[in-house]
Length: 149
Image 1 (cartoon, rainbow, N blue to C red):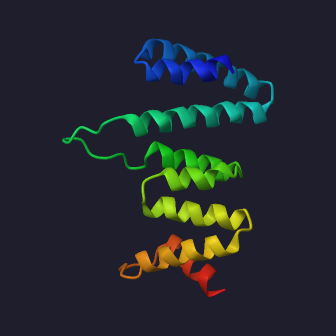
Image 2: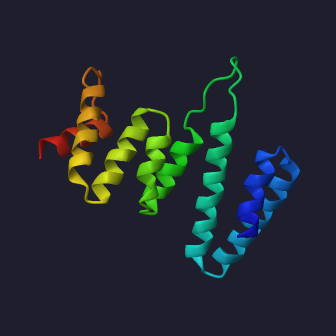
Image 3: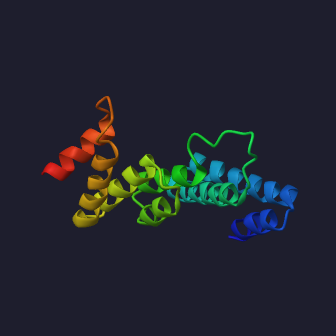
């Protein structure tokens, strides 16, 4: 818990060396837990590291001459939370950029939680967004199937 608090605190104050030291401690602990077959706690550390990366990514200014990330860190964190069946995935997708993948993740999270109406509304949004697509991709097909049932 101490390293969980120190790493983002150090990063927010600009002490990146201290943040890296604390992250290194967390990574070593994660590896030790996973070697001992204690994957639950190892996964919890992995989620926290991803959360810190997403917070850091969100707080950074983008240089105008560089491309945007292919997959934003917050969206990757939401994907990880969805895979871990963590209800925080929904809020994390909502905090992510308004991208097709984030909207799809939000629909899948609501569906997995049994929230069918929010899931249906979000899938409808995906159907609308992909209406003019020139090819059939799996995600729009998934959305169309869900909405039509």
